[in-house]
Every structure is written in structure tokens, then in C-alpha cells.
Image (cartoon, rainbow, N blue to C red):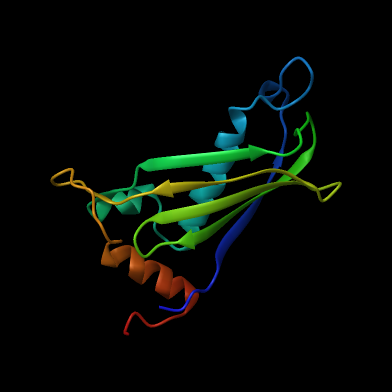
Amino acid sequence: MSKGTVSVAQTVKVPFYDVDSMGIVWHGHYIKYFEDARCALLDAFDYNYEAMSESGYGYPVVDLRLKYVKPARFNRLLKVVATLEEWEVRLKIDYRIIDLETGETLTKGHSVQVAVDLANGEMCFATPAVLQRKVAAYLGESDEA
């Protein structure tokens, strides 16, 4: 399968309740920004968490990594970009949080999710065909090899 790009970007204005006493986003909230972007990414190719469940699969996060480059601050506009990097065996999504005023990358990271058959709780060692079809359709590719 050829590799196209599935990517989305969302804008977030840092709310007061996400910052600490120094006006800097508390470290745990970056994961929330990643999750919001991940949900938008899954919606983009029509396979959000509800669709996953309806298709008989769950996709728990098994690895999550963040690198804090510079702090995000109160009231700043941020662009959160989520890009699907792998989907043949697992879902690997890369993230980048960018300050829209300066263009600087503030945070980067990735998450890894694996398919689990909801009927028996078993981890799948290959991405289910339904996800392969959804990504191929989004990329305008035929699912025929």
C-alpha cells in the first residue's frame, strides 16, 4: 500500500483553567490537546471511537510520548497537528503543537494504539480490514493490491 498523508490541524486558545500559577499550561493538559486532535483525525477518515466499537474493535493507547520544547502560555493561539504515520499493524499518530504567533514548535509527541477484538479481548497483530478500507478511501486509493 502506498503511503499518503492523513493529517488534521486544530486551533486551541489556551484557557485560564489549563494554566498553572505562572501562566504556563500544566503538563497534563498537552495530552488533552493531543486527544482532541486525535479525535478530529479519526473523524477525518470516518473511523472515530464510536465507529471502531460498532465494527467490533477497541483501540487502546499502549504508548504515549511527549517532548516539551517550550511552554504554552495562557491566552495564546496554538495549532495542534495530528498526523497518521502508521496503520498497517498499529495506529501511530504524531502530534505537534505550534504557537500560531511565533510559528515555534512548543510540544511534539506520538501515541500508539493497537486493535483489540471486543468479542474476546484479544489483541490483533494486524490492523483490521475495516480500518485499512477507511484509510484507503480517505486517501483515494483502491483497497485492491
